[in-house]
Image (tube, rainbow, N blue to C red; front, side, top):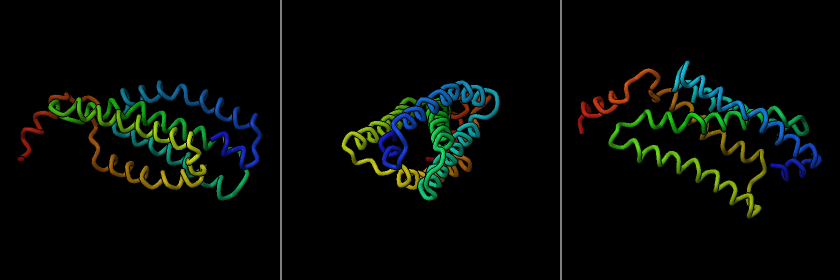
Length: 174
């Protein structure tokens, strides 16, 4: 990201300050997510964080298309949203699967989130990472699909006994 910002005419100082500000803004996200997850809704907390991520992606795309502008808000929203998704995704997935597959399913979710980060780093190290605007456009569509699927099919797990998942799994034919 800093290299991409420098190519667009932002100074090294601005690019570094942007990352520092975004990191400071996103730090309390984990606490906010834990609060929302435990007090409001597990499903809608995840959907909300995905929506924040999408707003950040859309603003980055807009910044790319329109030209210069202040990148702090788009990057901060993207970092807050993605950190929020990561903070919520593992406990939500652990609460969404029956006991027989819970460990394996949660492990796969964890592995996929880590693989995405490692893959992005590998592209950046090899100088193969696309510009921010193209990345935002490519990520925006599957993110919107994921948000719609979770909103439509996701279970609310707050206040539910996880053993109910095992009972409902046994009741299903197959």
